[in-house]
Image (cartoon, rainbow, N blue to C red; front, top):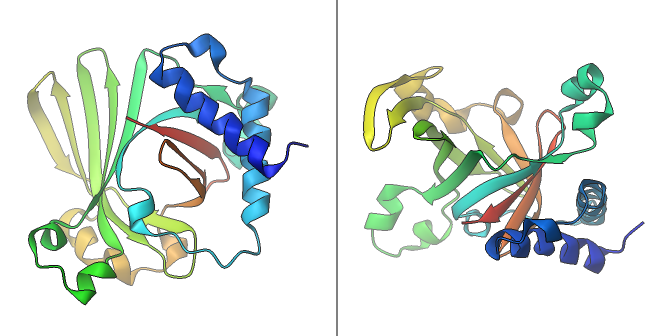
Amino acid sequence: MVDFEDAIATLRQVAIAYDTKKLSTRPDPAAIVESMTTLERGRRGERRELSLDDVLGDWRLVFVTGTQKTRKKAGTMIGAGRYLPGLVNITISYRADDTVNAGENTAKDAEQNTGRVVNQVKLGGLTFTVTGPIEAIAGRQTLAFDFTQWCVGLGSWMPFNGELGNGADGDVTFTERSLKDRPFFNYFWTDERAIAARGKGGGLALWIRT
């Protein structure tokens, strides 16, 4: 069992490997999973609240494990965790609400806990993008989200787009829905260079800042 500081060092090494383009120095997948579970266990019992500021910015997904359902179907290969192939670039971007960015710095702005998410998958010149609202849940390490818009593009050309779920109505009612009715990530570790979370389905994920 690795200790807390060693677990942090292991996850930071992943970011360094990608930043320096020396992927051969990436830690073994089993070490990544062990480090993430160590950090997750270490956070349990803490009265720690996720701030939207902790995750704002652009992040590249580099490592995943299977959800509880996929682990049952696919066995240990996916469940043990794996790095994403280099041909696929998946990024997630968290943004504060435009109304807050454009407004004055009021006390209400300082307590801002909602914003927007942009999730993008690039494969060659093809891009698939989904967007929607996010909310940092008060008193928890949880970020709820939903995808209400999508678009498909080739290079800078975005000819196809539409709505997902309830579309614009889903944006309006997003914060009124209970957490169990929304997708979410529990971010048990956030750092300037990387963030790690467990999803609603039980899978683990690691992103590095782009």
